[in-house]
Length: 257
Image 1 (cartoon, one colour):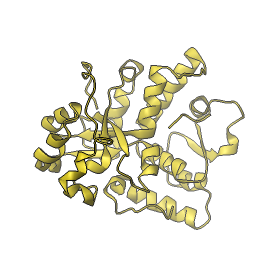
Image 2 (spheres, one colour):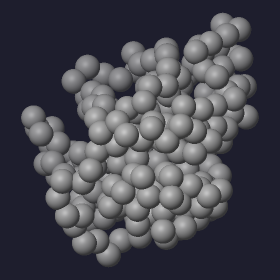
Image 3 (tube, rainbow, N blue to C red):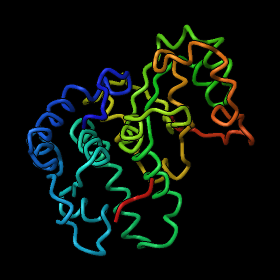
Image 4 (cartoon, rainbow, N blue to C red):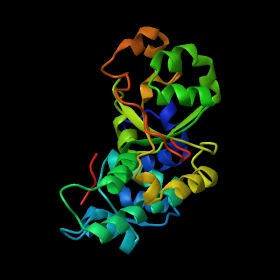
């Protein structure tokens, strides 16, 4: 927990409850108990040992309404997202469980389970003026971050994926979110949670309605991007190679067994 710098902008939405849980853990409380005490949540947090061998994690969470927790930042942030966005997390878990019931566990997850995993681990919600969203969809990085930079004052970005929140404890330039265009203000809570949950349907997720965004490029999120040469790194800010597929939706690490 000491690795977390709560002053970072990406942690601001998670700070209030996160500091409470982190303080409890620092004082010897097991992480699953600290998360439970910070509830309520639609699942009960339990030790990792509660997950029976060879049982799919997502199916166990869905059927038992229990979320196995390991020590460390990964499950710490997963717990925080469960606490703050319970409807969305439940919807994603419900889709995963339905796909497992339909197709079982195979070497490849299939498009729906793959999309759920991508967003659950590395997703973010972006509410932004249309011009910013269009530039992002086009991977027009200079226009997005330099020419339209003043518009970012009207934008909100909420990192949802717990793996990305974990990785941002040690920020590096290449960290990339898969963003969904949001139709609600982005404070973790009822409105954003309900909207995201309503979008988490198999037919929507199968189309992977996400767009990659290198998060340290967001104005105000990283001091180095004040120098616009920051965006010249084509290994991070990559041009789009193929046309963006047409979609009618309002949009924006591996699964554990």
